Structure formats: C-alpha cells, structure tokens
Image (tube, rainbow, N blue to C red):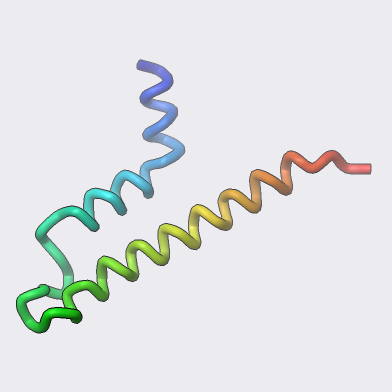
Length: 67
C-alpha cells in the first residue's frame, strides 16, 4: 500500500493527464468541428511530455557524480 501511495505522489500528473485524454469531456468540444476537439487533448499530451522530459533531465543531473 505504501508503494502505491508513493507512485501516486510522484506520478499524479500522469494519471490526471491520462484520465483527461480518455474522458469524453473536453474543454473544446469535438462536435464543433472534427479536428478542433483534439486540440486540448494534444495540448495536455504535449505539456505532460515536456514535464516528463524535464523531470527526466533533472533526475539525470542529480545522478551525475560531481568531480
């Protein structure tokens, strides 16, 4: 149970992003036009990807031994 709590604590943004992308509720409705409804999903996906990349770089920087 403790590992699950730690996972949620570290990866909450991934979980919320995944839920938002698969949910039928969007900020920009897809019924307006066929491609416009995907803009908010793509924005969430892009911002989550950038967040993960920065998080990865910061962890790698911490792992590098200082001389």
